[in-house]
Image 1 (tube, rainbow, N blue to C red):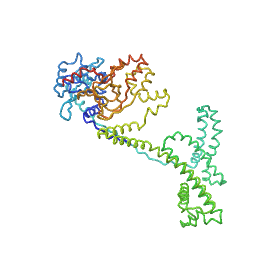
Image 2 (cartoon, rainbow, N blue to C red):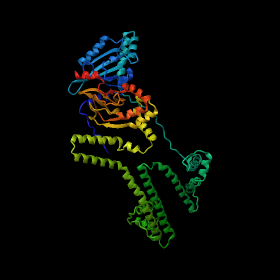
Image 3 (tube, rainbow, N blue to C red):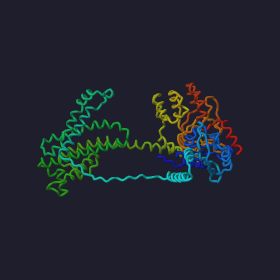
Image 4 (cartoon, rainbow, N blue to C red):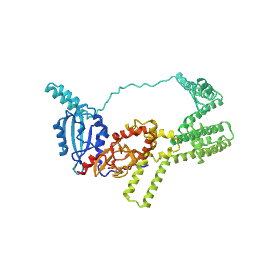
Length: 609
């Protein structure tokens, strides 16, 4: 099966490393592009920063990483100038100042600006970290004496050290004496009787499925159904035959044959196991177990025949298979042991059922020959039924692997026939292998095409629920969401692959399900996209060609979902009441607007750098 070899992006992989290293750890930071002078636009912001400030990620992209939008009346003008100076001079800076959240709430912030250099030593990014220290400021204001303040700072330092240490909690296991469970003879008898009787009682209270396919819950109907079907079999199976041996009770030999009635209960077990027939390993195990069980029964009958030949056939007792076994083992007095007799019987049964008899255990008397003939006939049927199914099951288990190798060979033949360049061929193979590892070669659209539209819509809504749960679609009706779910498609990008190139006609809006991408223009990073980001255009209702203003390139393996603009416009025409809300909401939900002409301030700034 395919294995991702990890095609590495040739450049800017450190962007994804920074975003992955810091995000998800409750760090509140933004990444600013140091190559755009004076503006230093935000190209990435962590989830923690969005939670701290109250702004959505789409609202923050392309704003200055100096965070002018957090300034307010109490923000120091001197510190604002120092922040801008640190960015212009590309140096590290740390300070405490007052910021304001989106709702106007004031908070004290520990601001830390760290320049990030690339492999050439050039400052390409600013990591601007924000920490809410409002609570610490309140405690500091309440301190009355230098001694208490010194103690507090000491405790804070100890706390900062302690939070970076992982503690392992250990407990003491109390040793307890284990006493053996002793069951007297009465308890054993009670146990042998209790289990079957409990099973019978439960069957009187267990629902069943009628011939019409409905589940019957009526107690009287359940009782009548059980009495007329399985009650007699369960009563016979519940008889404690093993206790007859325990108390040395002599009974007619035919009574012990009633134990075989218990085998009829296997029919109910087969009905329960039918639901697992789709699993090849389960079916294979059941078939082999059935074959082994049949061999065991045949071995028992073979032993009974050999025993009866010795006891009841004075003319042929010395040529029976059991007597021959005793002569080989040199135990003519008491005969071979039960263990040796059973192993030999099982060996003969399996060799006869599989038609590979070696002749070292052979049928000599008429009874033994008749039984051998029956065994070989049964073996022929079992060989066709069991091993024929085993072959089909094994082929089915490896069908996906065979299909993968077939398609890989076709792809390599295509590359060889058309003499594709090595780099392009490598990209094709990487894309095929990774796509196969994601969907296992299953074409969802082909699989669902025969299902009713209602069912396909429900399945599509489940598969695309992550995209449909965006705030952009909160006001859409269920019918609108179902229509949208049917036009959502999936896509995949390998590292260093371009999803969109600058100047291309925009064909869809894209949602990043996993991985990270970067938005580039004139070799300048404008944004870093991660899981949950939405890119596209804010002008979708008009029938016009939308030119893209930047390149979108994958940094890692990326799974994407997209809605084609053509299909989106058709759905919005069907639901005009939602179309107006969609137009107004998408302007705020787009992480980056790819429409040519948007973000002019950043584009102009890039031209002067």
